Image (cartoon, rainbow over all chains, first blue to last red; front, side, top):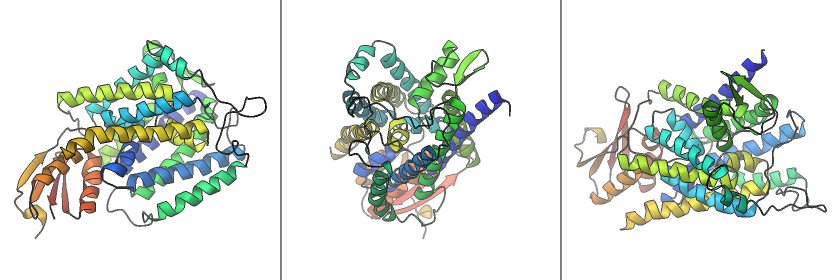
Length: 353
Length: 82
C-alpha cells in the first residue's frame, strides 16, 4: 500500500475504532471515577480496570515478542514526581468541570455535543499555554526534579525495576488482584442494550494494543492511545502547518506536516459519530450558556493538568499505566483524587444543602 | 401497569445539559418526591439516559422505564420512587 495512504488510513481507522467503542460502551473514565463516590457504583470502573489489564498484558506481550517497530520498546514516561502529582490532581479536577475526560470530550463531539467542542478547544488552549506560553515556567519548574534509579541513575523507574523483579511477576500480581474484583461485577452477563461493561472494557484494551502496534509501525515509536499530545499536534498541523511532534515518522498532507497520532485523534470523534448515527443518537445539543462557559474553563484546567502531568486519563491512566512506569501510576492516582475532590465540592456537597 | 402509562407527578427537562447534570438534577428532583410518585425525565445525553440514571435507580431500588424517541433524538425516562 502507498505509504502515505497507509499512514492516513491506519490513523483514522484506529482512532475511529476507539471512538466507536467509547460511544457504544458509554465509556467515560471521569464517570468511572465519579460513580465510585457519587452513587457507590463500580460498573464503569470495572470496565476501566478490565481494559487496563488487557492492555497491560497485550502491550507487554507484543513488546517482548519484538513486534513493535521503531525503538521496539513501549514508551515509559520519566518520573517527575512534582509534575505527576500536581498535574494529575489538576487534571482530575478539570474533568469534572468539563463534564468528561480526555476521551469523554472527544467521543461526545461525535454525538453532537457542542459543550464537548468547547471543552476540546479549552483543553488545547490549556495544553499550549502550559507547554509554550505563560505557564511554561511552572511546567519547567515542576519537571525540574526527575527521579532515576540504577547505579548510574539513568533508568526510568517502573513498578518492576524498583523492586528488581521480572515485569511478568508484577503483571501476574496485578491480575490476581484485579480478577476477583472484575468477577464480582458479573462480567459474563448479557447487556440489555449497547455494550455491557465487560465488552467495553475488553474492546478498549484490544484497541489500545492495536494502537501501540500501529503507532510504532507507522509513527516510528510506540506511543499508543493518548490525547494530550495528539490533540496539540493536530491543531498545530492545521493552524501552523507543522505538528511539532516527537514522533519519528510524519507525512505532509495539504502542505502541512502531520504526525500519525494527530490523524488518529480526529478518527475518534468520527468513529463516535458513526456509532451515534447508527444508534440514532446524533443530535446537536446546546447546554445553557453558563454550563458552556464552565465546560470551556474545565477544558482549560484539564489542558494545564495534562501538560504538567504528562498526559490525560488515557495517555497516563491507560496507555502509560500499561507500560508499568511509576510516573503513570502516580499521575493516575492523583487524577482520581482530583476527580473526587471536585465531585465532592461540585456534586456531593450541594446535594446535602 | 407500566410506569409509562402513569401520569407523572413531576417532569424534569435535562435536554442539552452536560454530564453530570442530568443525573444530578434527577437525583435532586427525586428527593422532593414522595414514595410511590413518578418522575418523568427528558434526557438527550446517551451516557446519562442509558447508563448513569438507570444504574442509580437500580441502586436505589426505584422503578425505571425508558423510551427512546429516535425521531427526536432523546429519551423519556420514567422513575418511580420507592
